[in-house]
Length: 376
Image 1 (cartoon, rainbow, N blue to C red):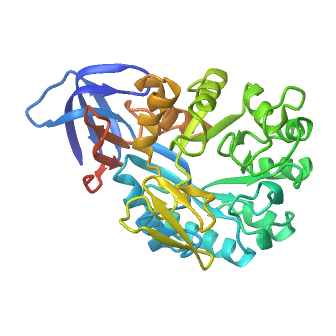
Image 2 (image 1 turned 30 degrees about the horizontal axis):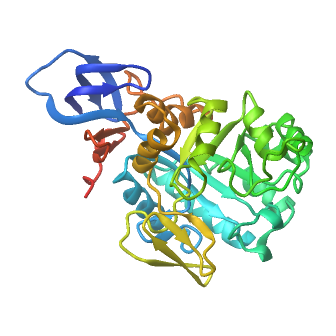
């Protein structure tokens, strides 16, 4: 089905276009330019590439760990689409092998059914560091087993991303994962600089929520943060909710890595797209206070951040331009995940799009050319 949209301002991922018409055929963009036919639907706002979030624990009142099912994935997609996320990696926090297998099966079923908006799965743990575990349950933190290696190597899970602590995962295991097509990120780690470097040399290609739950930069001990900032190739996810890191750290990361080296992530829990104030997590309760999520002891527990807010925060905290903020929300994660048809609004690309108002609030989003429910 062919459809056309005319908008006063469009960012294609590289450049701005004024008074532009975008023509879709099914789920693809087939033309863009100044062809203003009467059939084009007029859009009031700013049209930009859909946001891609590689770390989404939950949404719409659902936490993936609590209910790993196709239905939960659909709920998470719908909740985040209200805030501009058109593609995501649902993320399973450290859990039992049985729960990991259940989550993997749910993802395989979702992909087989063609559920829009899901790209694959992110396993955040369980091969992490106890000193940097955050809210990850210590009873489930463990070394990488043959069963887990086989799970990560499944080819029916779409994109597979695993966050590991390199002091607990041997470089040979990282090489095996990378050879199997798995993206390996480093995080929840107390590793020193040299251990981190060996993991990068083995094929690790990213860092999970830069600065948070990792060994910090010192003058003689650069540690994991130093390795992340110094790397010319590894990309870093970063949580810009105003709670996970000081704005000065956000600016430092931006100066070191630039928009091509940073990916905006939400680390969102069940609260996004939900009116609830408390949510279940391993039989305990997590609490929302605005966009801050904590456990009963007041520790940060993921976030209630959405991607549209992250784009706004990138400008406020980092001093990024709107173009740079949008790149970190779409083009850079698309490049990291090797999504050749996402992250840009150009002919041949999937029609994953977001319409923003002048305050950068989401008015509408499209996944594969299909309008999602309008943001409330």
